[in-house]
Each structure stands twice: as structure tokens, then as C-alpha cells.
Image 1 (tube, helix red, strand yellow):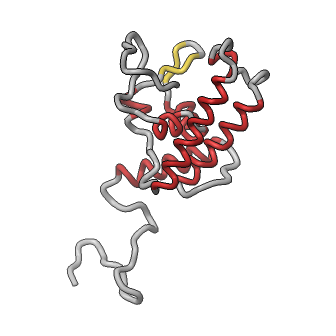
Image 2: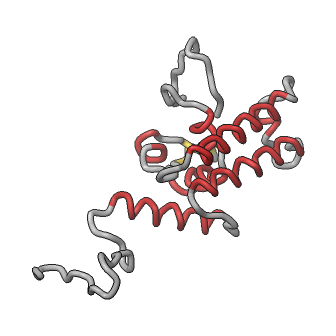
Length: 168
């Protein structure tokens, strides 16, 4: 993924997010989003087939990142772009080869991941399975008409929860 000037025409099987900035690039390049991609994307042979309708539109973005969190993600995304720019002769495939990924790019992505995790209010995920479970919990909360079990808040201390089908 990259930021492209408005003069670029996107076609074929590429996707473009109009008016996206470094915040969007940062979240989309994060380990959080990549875990979602690996779980929800279809495949053509061994390649991912990123779908706007299934993958992008259903991705649970950070709910309400603060200005400070947005700025941290934007700065970290710029750090990833700057690390990539240190290797102008390398393609993205070269840069992201797990065996030869430049240490500066690895560090830039670690910084980005920490900033994105903070915007979700979480950190210290042990693996992609934890990330995907967290994202599906967020997805359920966003899309469900009823609150998830155990999430009802009391209106006043000591007042019991309202029961469905009863009036007070």
C-alpha cells in the first residue's frame, strides 16, 4: 500500500481509497489490519484477493482515536514511508521479503504497530489469533443490534438492569 498523487489512475484489480492520508495508510499497513486481511481475504492461488466489500468495508477501524493517537499513527506511517525511501532501487516485494527486510523498515513497522494498537486501546497482542479475535469482537459490537453479553451498563449505582419485555 502506498500514498499516490491524484494524477495516478487506478485500474484493473487495484483498489483506491479517495482522499486517504497517512492515518489511513498507517492503519492499513499495520499488523492489526494485516491479521484481518489474512483471515478475511479470499485467495487466487496463493495470492490474497483484497475485496473492498468484504475486507475493507467490514474492517473495524479504531473507534474514536484522539488527536494525539491520530498524529502518532500519521507520524509512524511517515516513518514507514521514509524507511522505504532509503532503498529507492528496491521494490516493495524486495523490501518486505521476511528474510531480507531492512532493520530500519522493521523498526518503523514496530513503531506503527504500537501506535495503531494504542488507538484501539489495546496492546501486547501475543499473536494474530488474538488480534483477529479482538477485531471480531469489535465487529460484533459495531454490527449487532443488541449489546454483547455482559456489556450492559447500570444507569445508576445500585439500580438493577432493565429486563427485556418489562416496564418500570
